[in-house]
Image 1 (cartoon, rainbow, N blue to C red):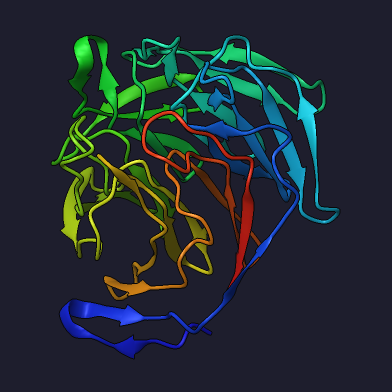
Image 2: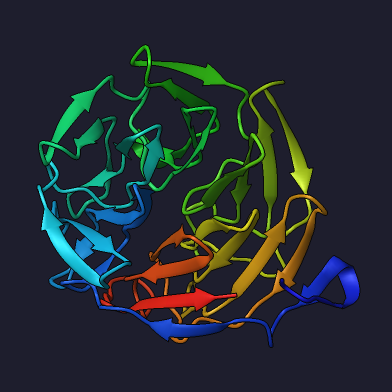
Length: 305
C-alpha cells in the first residue's frame, strides 16, 4: 500500500514508500525511446543511439531472468515513436525520422512468433513526439507534431480489427513530448510542451472514448516535457523530463480514482526521453538522456512500491 501524508494543493508525499534498484542495462545507450509490455516482457524499439543518430534497433527484456535480447530491427530508423500493446500485438506508431526530426505516418506491428515487423494502415497524418494509450483494444494517439512543425490537436483512434483509423475529439491543449496512460477506460494525457522545453506544461487532460469528450484533471505538481508514464496498481507513475537547461529526476504518482497527485522517491539519475513500463507491481525506467538535448544512457532502474 502507498501510504500518503497530506500536503497542500491536493498533493501527497510518498517519499518513504518504495525503493529503487538496478536491472541489467540496455545493450546500448539510447534516448527518445518508449516501451510496452507484451506477455510479461518489455519491448523497446528505435530511438537515438550513442552516436546521436536515429536507430532501428529493437530489444526485448525478460524480468524473470533479468536479460535483454535483440529482436528484429524496425523496417526503418525511428525516434520519438510511441509503442503500445493492443490485445496480443505490439504496435509502433508514427514517430520522427532522420536527424532532422521528420514526422512520419507509419504504423507497424510486431509478429512475436515470426520475429518480424509488418505495416498496417498509415496514420491519418504524419505524427511524431506524440503519446499513445489503449482503451477497449483500440490505440488512441494524442499530441505530437506534424509536417511543418505544427502541433496536432486531432485525436486519432486505430481499430486493429478493421485496420482503420478515425478522428476523435481534439485534445484541448495541443502539445508534444507528452506522456499518456489509460486507466479504467479513460486515457490521460500528461505534461508535454509546445515545442519549447522552456515552456513545459503541468496540464493533465482525460479523454473518455465512450463519450468522445475531454475533461481537465488535477495538474502535475511539476511542469515537465520529455517525460514517461506507466500504470502501476491502477495509478499512473510519471518520471523524468527535460527543461531547457536541466533534466528531471521527478517521480510523481497520479490516482485517477481521487484525482490527486503524490510525490514518490526520485529517479536515481535524472533524465529525459526515457521509457517506462510496468510488470506486476514494478516500474521499469529505461534509457533516456542524462543531459538536455543529445545524450544517452543504458541505465535501467526498477521501482518497487
